[in-house]
Amino acid sequence: MNTGQLIKEVFESRGMTKAAFADDINYSRQNIYPVFGRDSIQTNLLHKICLSLKYNFFKHLSDEVEVLLDGNGHSAALDTPDHMFKTMKVKSEINQIRDENNHLQKQIKLMEELLVQYRSKS
Image 1 (cartoon, helix red, strand yellow):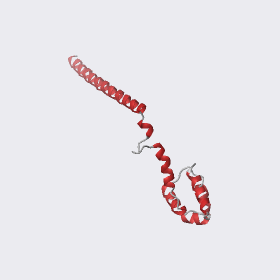
Image 2 (cartoon, rainbow, N blue to C red):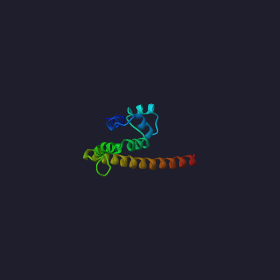
Image 3 (cartoon, helix red, strand yellow):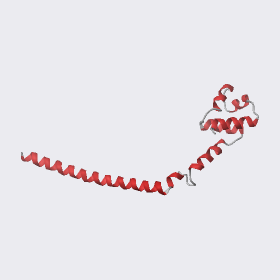
Image 4 (cartoon, rainbow, N blue to C red):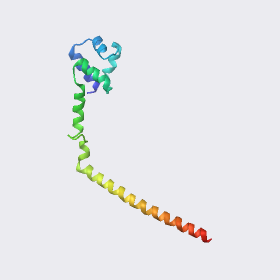
């Protein structure tokens, strides 16, 4: 369920008038209708809506995030052995590329020195 739909359901369950709700959140009565259709909403507006409807929408959104995160705030999907193996493999490949790059830079420097010597003899 999107945030706007949840706000609409809580609003309707409270039996509050649209005028009173609009006044609480500093919106005109006509401008509250788009709020009910939003997938996302700015936190400062959501805070006003929470106070007006006496409902913690942040808790609802937080519960959705909890499903995606472990207790330490890390993505659960990133803690799988498969992901950790892939991460180690990528790190190993990066180190190999760095080593190769360093080797090639040394070869280029040597070739440049040889070129300077060759030109000075000519």
